[in-house]
Image (cartoon, rainbow, N blue to C red; front, side, top):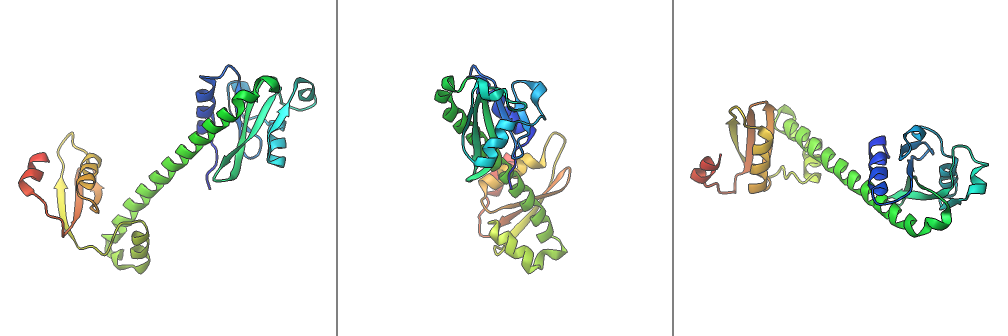
Length: 218
């Protein structure tokens, strides 16, 4: 389940405040300020955000109302959603009448950044899980039905016959760069690096490799 963190909240604040002449706060699902244009407010509770979280709707607070709420300034507080789930609150400081034009645009920008961060996290997890799974498949546990099934679900195509190559890398060369090049050139390849200067490349056996050109490139 994706949650806001301080880094993402502050990125939202910094990006929106670069084009907006108002202070912006980002609160988590408990109403705690994670990011703000006013650093002294970070890690404090925001009662306006708690109202949004309790009601699931936009809450506008004018100057008069703000006097009766703890840690709150006049402004508009909007639900921050990801996959239709309320994950936090976006607050823009100022009199509501002057903010309505900006509010939805700022929320759209914030939710786009949240979506991008979630996709990046998913991709990173998928890459790491694929690497871990390949190491297991190529070890003694490679015939485990559970591992084979998970590999199939991740698109690793464990049913394909493969031809292995072991590369020993020299100084200045990285297994990551070689792996990226091989997998982009030869789809469905497996690349596993078990040591700093080596890479095991398992290419689909049905794929023809132009060895002279490959060696020249390497």
